[in-house]
Length: 219
Image (cartoon, rainbow, N blue to C red; front, top):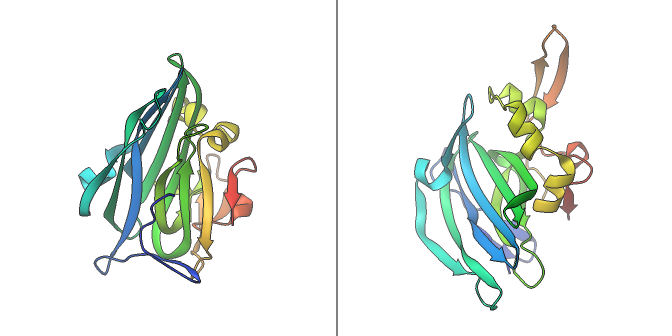
């Protein structure tokens, strides 16, 4: 069973809250090798323009890191890490998953999350193949960011990163979103100005209708 940050009760999950302007979220990461396949999972804090730092290196951990061996079977090797981190309100968290076969990439996916105490309560889980417990990479309240919202956060993704990690079909192979509770308060809507002067509206909110269709969303 995946480990969740917070306390389970009859109505669902209640996320843990740290200091007034932080939220304590659960994160999981590591590596699993099964036969010819390798799964590499990482959780980053993202700062403009696209500076990535391991989340618990930038923000304080709450408690200690748990180490979980995935080598329960002879053909499986690797180690997963589970921890809780106090993340500032409004910070951007990147969940990144890579799957290779015989050393060649077959599926890479990334989801960007804006941490927000009044946002949707959800988990992002990475399947690790048959017979291996999936890794719960994130549990907390926030909003999954669309490409417009990522750009509006002054995060500049290179064409190579977009083609390598932002394909909807590959994200669906690597990551699954599990919704536990709706947002307490909807996120504000803002205007995005595109090259050439065109504008569009974007809400920093996890409206599952705006997640690429092939990403799995479970309620």
